[in-house]
Image 1 (cartoon, rainbow, N blue to C red):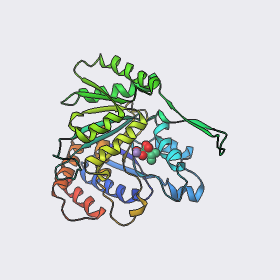
Image 2 (cartoon, rainbow, N blue to C red):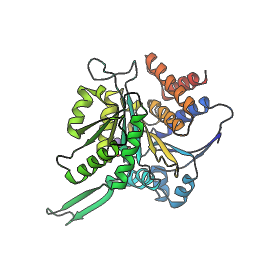
Image 3 (cartoon, helix red, strand yellow):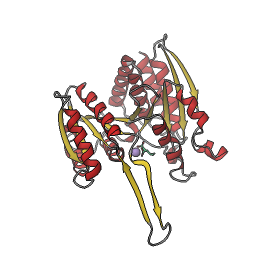
Image 4 (cartoon, helix red, strand yellow):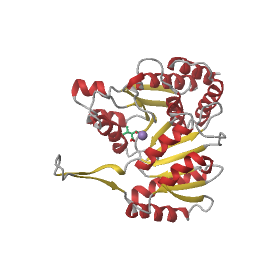
Length: 344
Ligand code: IPM
Ligand code: MN
């Protein structure tokens, strides 16, 4: 349809500021005949302090009815670690079965990188989003004693692995270089690691045009720094993907530019788009946050919803803006500049 019914969860800290800029650019880029409806959800630290709720069923049901969700950031030092992360962010990823956590990394012209020789970096990490050590499977025995044992069991189902691996092959096959790298640690994590490798090889037989590669995660971190241009599409589990994508952000202009989509490709649930960065309470409310990661997440959302041309216009605007960034600008000024560029 020519309307977008968007749920907005600004969340905590700088989430509020960056989401406002994301919406500004979204409004500016959409053609007149695409009607944008937004509904804001009050979820995060404020709500938890006021009511003790993180994500009640009622909100979850209501969120389900939207075409997509735009999320700012979740987490606040005034809330015990894990409460909002598990009770809100991960709950959304699990409840809406957002199994493709898509995290592109591109070194835009004009942006900083600690890497020598400005390698040509343009890859995308397909991080599994619903399983692995994030599943919450585990517990403690003899809690609080010197004999305490804590387990955190990684859950890997053939179903869950195959669907994300398949999605990664599809994405690799649609890109010019058509290369897919599986990252795991199957020399040590032999149970999960071999499941991933077997499924990766079996599904790969259906994609003869895609070149494949395998790397242990520790080796992958070396190549992210010494040879990042070797990567095109990477598929990996939830925790490896979490760690690798922060490293990827650090070598491609920083966390202020890293966008992500939590996608359910079946369309049975709304997909959720969010910057990779957190709520950054130390700079919240000061206009210092870079809204670019959120704006690029909006582009991923438009792409997912089939508004390919508008997505490309946002990426072009960001590319041009980054190439010309010199003076320090506020969150609002960057948002204004990007909105002006996409409106041209
Ligand atoms: C991310 C974050 C989350 C994750 C946290 C906040 C639960 O680090 O989106 O990368 O680990 O997935
Ligand atoms: Mn992370």
